[in-house]
Amino acid sequence: MTGDSVRYSGLRWSDVKHAPPYMSAAWVSRYQERLREAREIYRRLVASKPDNWLLEWILARSSLSVGDTAAAASGFARVLAIGPDSAPMFMLADRRDLALARQRPAEAAALADSVLAFPPALRNYSYFSMLGRPSEGADTTIGSRQAAAWRPILLGVLPLGFDSLETAIAARLSGPQRDDFLQLSTLAAYHMRRTGPALDTAARHPVKRFQAWLARGDSSRARATLAEFDKELLARHAATFDDGGWLFNAESHLELGDSATALARLVEWERRWVFLSRESMILEQYYWQRTTPRLFGRTWLLYGDLARAAGRRAEAGRAYQMVAGLWANGEPPVQPAVQRARDALKQLGFRP
Image (cartoon, rainbow, N blue to C red; front, side, top):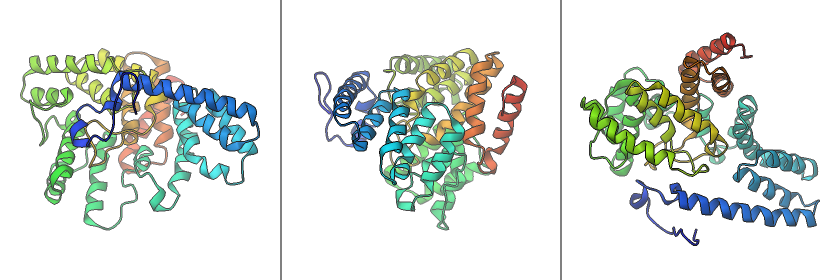
């Protein structure tokens, strides 16, 4: 993409992973501007050809991209009414994304299940984990079995024998994939074990430096580093893709005993959810389990717990409903969290 203030082309991931151009406020602002311009063009085209289902579909997708969920819902309904018999099938992923953006977890889960029934080559396996199924249909190879056993950590569940499993996976991997695995394993598990194999006080990302300093017992440097990440996070454009930063920032504030700021971060995360609900890449990840839907349930659960503890009933209710809805048919590792969410909903006066 090129524009008045942004240029991004052909860069290697290894060159940009610490600060991807698409995460900058200038890039996102220009990208959203282009999307809005495109939507206006398709509005005019649809007005001139009101029975063209393909134009209507593109317009609906454009509306969702700029966060206009009402227009997207109307457009997708119109396509279902005038489109071909195959329209319900090829629009499943679009309707799933819309249901997620509108915080309708049961609907999103049903649509995600339908998409995951596609042939294996067409599946996005991260959505299995979004639904609380971290096995992700693992086959019988040792690599798949190990990844399936490790993946609950992304959902906020520390598997038994995690350290040994982590060592075994690292021994099997090499090069950038091994590096990314160790980075993500350290990052995702830190809140549960307070250590990790890739802790580095000289890491490029401030949340990783924070974890390293705190693991050394240097809370002063840890606080200063987290403040750096706070500033970066809050300066993001409202439509910036999620990279797990809001979750890991909130968990970091909890490590320092600051639940109020942790909650504030997730309140802001929900405010941006219409954009953050899309698939993106976990910070600095590319070669290992890199996509954000695997973190959705974990983030909503933490949000619910923090909001409930603070007496914020409405926020807690919405968050627990997302957990109970997305993970309703999840695998055993997430079922204690599902039951906890359901119990909390009853106590708060919501329907589970």
